[in-house]
Image (cartoon, rainbow, N blue to C red; front, side, top):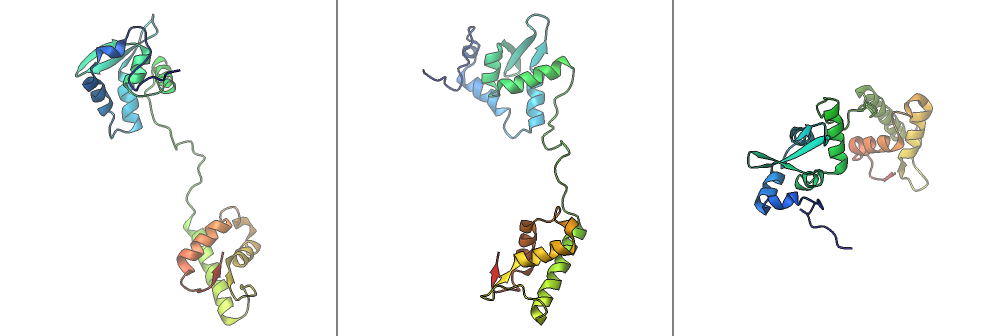
Length: 186
């Protein structure tokens, strides 16, 4: 089975053949350095709601609008059927396309400063205990083991385990105390 080239749409009306290669490239250049909202709004403006057929699709030749089939519209604008379907559903509801990526509200918020302060003070406490010989956070070879410090941190404040994972604790320790210890085991 032979694949289609970049500008073949497979439509019966050969809509794409009405556009020269230069005109097709000009259509695609309109999307260069545009945000998703700007691209969606441009495509949205090129789709009209009708009775039969349900939608009419347009492509621009310079400033002139030309009617094309759905397949040619998708191919000329280098978009997906899913994106065009989404835009037509929005057009039916008279809604303007908006980019909702990253706006679902379920992402974790940045760690509050007081959590960083708690980690920092705990690390200072552990390093000072190690320095004065009151607690040993080293293994048999004399290498500092951050995992033991983290375990003490979680034991002292178990409710912090959700906010501060071992890897967060380790990364913070390396960034702020990495120069303090010549031997460090992660």
